[in-house]
Amino acid sequence: MADKHARVSWKGDLENGSGTIEQVGSGAFGPLAVSWAARTGDEGGMTSPEELIAAAHASCFSMAFSARLAKAGTPPDRLEVSATVTFVPGEGITTSALEVTGVVPGITEESFVAAAEDAKENCAVSAALKGNVETIVTAKLAA
Image 1 (cartoon, rainbow, N blue to C red):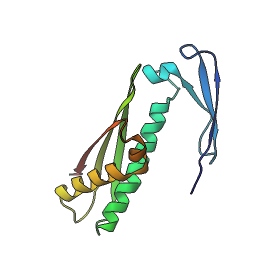
Image 2: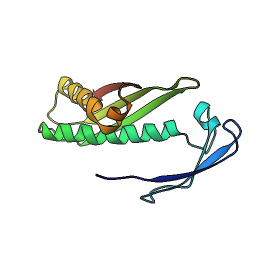
Image 3: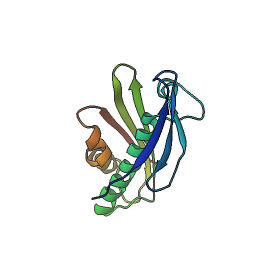
Image 4: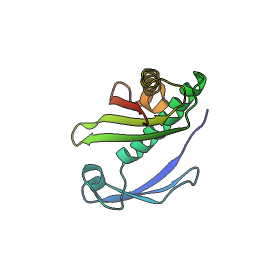
């Protein structure tokens, strides 16, 4: 078991206020500015919970996918993963779309796509989103 921590401060109301992710337990990043405007548009220099979820989903998926590929005897040389998390005001987070391109010697496109689907269904962030957020994966081998 591992507990992970973050500390955030917020000033003001939702629409006009702003906050700061003061620190995370690992010390890997922070401070990071956050705001409502960053959630609903493009507030330069500020992040949002959805952007952080996208980063978490892409990294979790890449780990799960690389583990499945290696277990099948075809470890990846490289995986490039991006995640797009969609936030709709009044509805919340509706979608997390993963895109992955991989360099994986000895694998067919069909097996690559199947392993990507399996990783999507079984990574811890996908599991946390399941039942609330549509998760999509698009996978292709690099040319």
